[in-house]
Amino acid sequence: MTRITLPRPDDWHLHLRDGAMLTGVLPETTRHFARAIVMPNLVPPVVTGAEAAAYRARILAALPAGAGFEPLMTLYLTETTDPADVAAAAASGLVKAVKLYPAGATTNSHSGVRDFDKVRGVLEKMAEIGLPLCVHGEVVDPAVDIFDREAVFIETVLDPIRRATPGLRVVMEHITTRDGVDYARAQGDDLGATITTHHLILNRNHILVGGIKPHYYCLPVAKREHHRLALREAATSGEARFFLGTDSAPHVDPLKECACGCAGCFTATNTMQLLAHVFEEEGKLANLAAFASENGPRFYRLPVNTATLTLEKTATPASWPAKIETGAGPVTVFDPGFPVFWHAID
Ligand code: DOR
Ligand code: ZN
Image 1: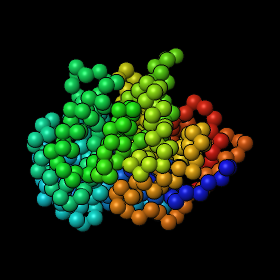
Image 2: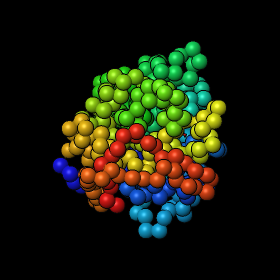
Image 3: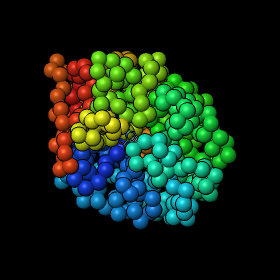
Image 4: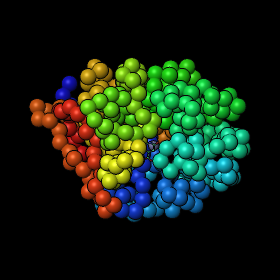
């Protein structure tokens, strides 16, 4: 197969930032994607319905002319989040999910949750109204090795929260381990899991062997090869619980290429071309629509897009800019390290 047409894909986990960075990176997403779940980890974070409405307005104002793109807003869960505000923001259709960052787990997560008992009321309200909780699934205990933080989180935090809150709909965001795949598969349809493009391509050797590669550093950090293979099998399986969340996370180059570099891979520009490559390698191109276009809307109880995106394989490698020049500075586009012959016809 050298040509494939999908319902227009959505990105179920995306960082758009704000201001000049937002304006610079937004066209990279709207070129191929119809909708995205927009992460709320701004500085300060997007905590209330009013803040989400204002952020949504800034995104709409930054849209390139003619872009048919819908930002799906999220709220950043804090220990003082008001359940009534969450419920009102969900009822109005503004907010599609609430994001849980364990405090200290990643970029701008210091306002996140330390004591899970303090968010019990919000989680119960969310279970009642069916609003999904998007979870950054890593423990922050310094005694836990960074490569084990996802597996330990599943056992010691995620599973207890789900048991204590029956009916809570949860998205395990950006799973990076076989443990994550296995856990997701053992649950009912109240649990979904997103997988990023870069975790289908990178293992931890790619980050560390032959010199440190700051543009391959993200959180959760890429794991051993057998975990990457489990993610590829899950993503390409067509199973309804697995769907695309790129976690495309722009940082300007000086903040990546330095002594204490930020976490994040910027994949908005070339995700669809890379996914076509990966799904073809796995012999599963026919399941790309399920992963990128169908399973996400089904979990979020939204319609599949009627517009389409066509991907075509040619003898000429696809090309994209090495960097996106934003008003905030240059952002390096994810380099898979191999040629890609799939092109997106936008
Ligand atoms: O790599 C990451 N970058 N992981 C996250 O969880 C946050 C994100 C960011 O906001 O830069
Ligand atoms: Zn993220």
